[in-house]
Length: 257
Image (tube, rainbow, N blue to C red; front, side, top):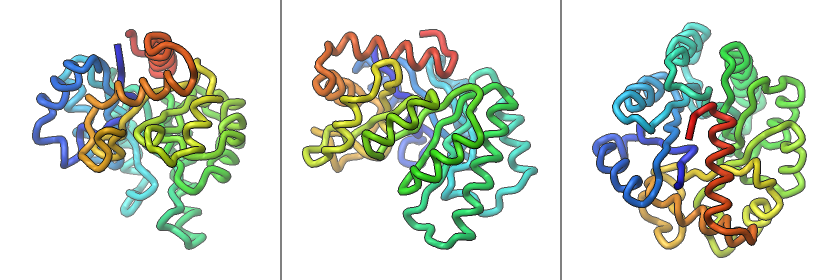
């Protein structure tokens, strides 16, 4: 009934017991998982996990905080991994300005973001986008370098107004634990205005656990708390939201649900 469109089963906090994590999630009704890479080793692990578990899929790519040592040769290694049928996206890719204030660092992030967009278009794949304190530049890049096969802004953290601008480009929007936090006013507003056919549920495990598990290590079994909050915010049934998310995931990532 539920799915996790963005988790890190390949993270060091989860890798020691992936079978247990998946089993716990399945017991909670979470039946599909997209595990996301941030560099080459994590991409290799994501693909390996996707082959160990029938309902785990992988995304491969370089996170903007993991660009040290990146090269065209490594992009070609990502390309080779992406040929695997269980790889459903390039990601997570994007921009992160939180720790990067120098223009040269931000320019480097833009360069490799665009390169990986080009790769996704070449491979007929969607992208999973990380955009932290960089939504303006992210929007500009996506306007200038259109996604031919779509994409999702994971852990969307911008304004409701900006969400509508991204929606014009056909983007999907992933929401996770913060929409359950009491003081997260804008994320809740974004869920309310997000078209139902553009909504995706995610945990970003092992990070951003939702209420009532905030502060704990997050795992995909917590997806029902997030979908329940989406249902309440949108004023539609839990079943309707879950069904829409299933259809959105299948449409974007070309995975039969």
